[in-house]
Image (cartoon, rainbow, N blue to C red):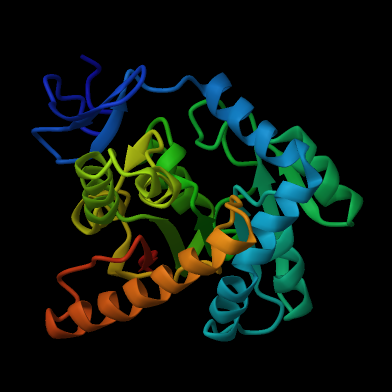
Length: 293
């Protein structure tokens, strides 16, 4: 069994058996991860497949458009503030940030996506991997005011080292924003799918409701990782869902998916409010933290 990518402890507790991998919970730090892990090359190929199809790439970005705008509307900046988007894809968020006055950069592992972004005149650099185990970020210390990671931290091979490197290029007092899948939701959706997998509709809807990437974070494990990297004032909350299904189930099914997301989002808000933010049941969550001054 593969040791935990965070604390190195071996002998994790199996949670699910997938086609060629197991989903395992570390008995030490409680992180959930795939065993055996995907290689760096496999992760890169995954993103190349996503962005080699321009239509698929545009569909994913368009579903996140409202999410990006809401974030930018809620962030204060002083002058020409610097922003970095790690795992920026074809640069949709960078373009929106620039239109709002940010001096925005991006890094990305997909060569296809980088070429598309650079063709749009965006400042995007090609990376060897989503993390930093292969190379340092190509920026000076304390360079950025805000660093965002939209559904990227679940692909990190060495999360503690990766977050520490991100902290290096973030200015004192700067903010890191991390959006990722919420472990309790996706485990519950998987178990519900297994319970009703004999129903044809289960594969059409429940089968698409959970996602298992190399790492699956919870509110606690993500908070702990950010704290170990030196960040403070950590706040983790439910993230608003993207519109419809970014990965395409067809127009008729997408309407049902959107309705389900709306109901879940409202329920997640109620649960979070009555629990004082302790219980997060949304499909995704967002963490915001600060680098000490």
